[in-house]
Image (cartoon, rainbow, N blue to C red; front, side, top):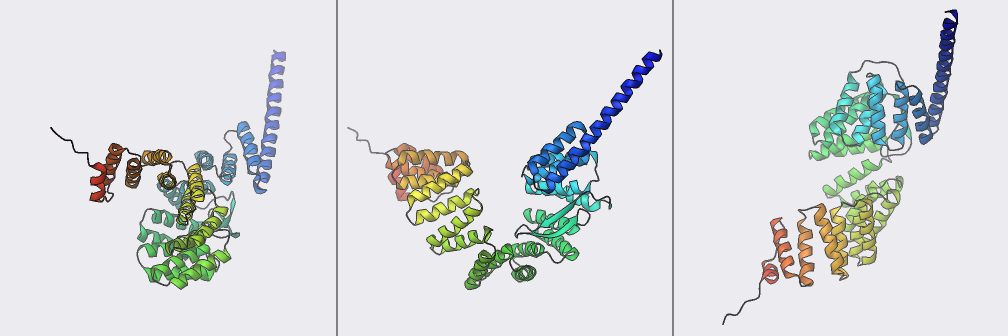
Length: 407
């Protein structure tokens, strides 16, 4: 009997010693993960926090910080899952709620993001788990250090952006007004309110907002871009060009101004200048398929078909289901008289967009050149059905049938 009790006591002592060892390991791994996160070693931090979770499955802070590291690695799905698990364990974890709302916004899940931000506004002030180094979306450097509880203006701004995305412009202005009333030194808030005012054709108010943004931050690229666009809308071309050039000179690391200037250069026939600006934008962000298409169109206008073909192909590599990239490449192949390849590309464009009238129209012309009159006529009829303007003489020429002589 005494021997049995001694064995139980020994087992209990062993379990306690193992539990203590496990707790020590959890603490060491968690501390290592925090240090790695602070040093920007995000993958290493993810591994450390995963080991913590394997040892202590209910450790909410470990999920939270792993989510933060995953967000830094642009793993938005993984970050969303970790923040959601954190909130299952601690539903009043303000930092997790703020970060999950931001992730949902980035994933364009606007209603879910709105729900998180509104809940955050209703939470009572509690314990601070984390601080945020706030950085403008349009400029370099950290401009504020805040806590989730002190981020009221940021939450108001996100709610305004969601309303802007939903085209609820009056509501957006109310939220941006609220953000500005809390913190009136953030140029982004004035730019966003200017966008909403511009959408409502309140050009004077929009201009004042953009100018206010530049008064706070003279190098604010998006503010300069919007002022340029608005100036062009109001007919002030020289002023528009001045703002764009200033935006590029002061913020050469952001693509917005290059793309805006490329668009206007192409509009006035300066395709060489447009190519230069598109190229500059692509050195900053090479994963925007539409920019590759636009530069390809500019190359095509200069009759550099080889470069145009290369850009359209790159666009397809970046985003395979982009119908206008397939159409544009097919057009280049047509100009090079590579008709079979062109037909294939037109077909893929139509596969991704079955209502692509121009693709049917252009394929009709290629089929006609290849002697496929029946297929050509079908495509022409389909293009007209989808709204493409068709010249009647062309239709008669393509769809006419040879007369049959009767004896």
